[in-house]
Length: 289
Image (cartoon, rainbow, N blue to C red):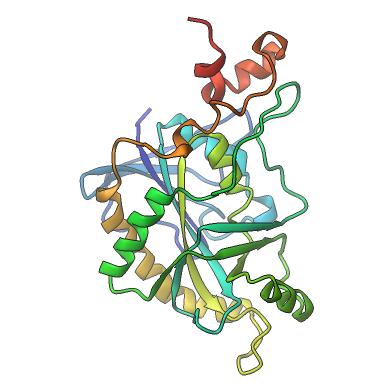
């Protein structure tokens, strides 16, 4: 099976990255089922990269239906240590305009129906999640955005809602009152699962609209999102191509050892079947040498 240390999870409208060479398509089955689609592994500017479209090619999968555990487990099995994800979002602040990009540093979880952990069934793990995005990878992506000529903002809070419906005006005004910056449907549980997998994670939040709070702009519709999205996606691709070659090989961030002090259950009390299932994630911490 081919290996890649960097992965890109494509959001709405991003189903491939032009310029990838030495391409192989990998069909992976995980203990959590199949990923959203076949994973494309190849070289981007000489760097090994894996690409996975979050919603499947042709956008077939609702945000709630995204097989997050299968996606992240599959990427981990390929050797991935860094993930750059693309997410379409609405703006909750005047200064963050449609067509702008945001590299957020915080999340608020408003999802309700999604499995957000690999663990359970006899194995208890509590990851630290105060900083849900990797600061090192986020800085690399932000700097690449600046050099690519994008209007890109660094830092901010993304509210993640269940969907698939967009917000009511009351909800939109509520999130604004919290001081949140953008709203989307896909950064969670992805960010939590990535942290449990000890992978660095940053997102390029592509702003497509003003949700439904802005009195001078029409309420968000799928048509509006798709229109602005085309411009955002082209910019995001340029940023990714610049960023992949600048990601440090050595990882000194907390992401790389997130499970080191997070596993609560004693190894001898863990169900053998569950230990085997999760060996890719926790094996190095519970295996006796």
